[in-house]
Image (cartoon, rainbow, N blue to C red; front, side):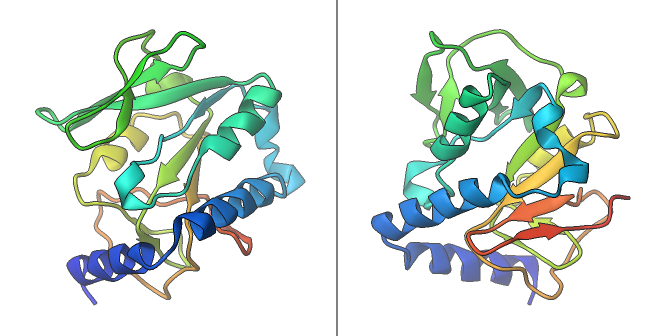
Length: 193
């Protein structure tokens, strides 16, 4: 299958999931996140970048992970996409942060304190599909690939997926692989390059 076919497959699989099931799977993902191997003590980090799910796309509900991060008193950063440039800015999530749906229905901060990618320790990444080598497939706009290349070398990239991995998905030189992927069933760890 090519990237377009994989995207179509996983968009269809998501559509088949009920709202109730989506919530249950998202809770299981948050619980499995707490089971990451101790040598990757992500909870010793400070700055966590997390996506806010697009309501009509049936993405993993990250609200449960947000609660974990807030309970651990971590700094939370959320993305704001700039469609015209293909880049994202990264805004500190605070109690008074106003979120508003973008033109693509993505909840985004209206304004706030911008954080440099080089200050981010852990990135939770949305995806449609991924494979057993940690290659991931998103919506095809390249926002995350451009962002991840600006992070420091030790930043951990953690995919969140409702599904198990494919054997292999097509990837390009510009694609940035994951270090981990958390699913409702288990935690996948990939070789750190």
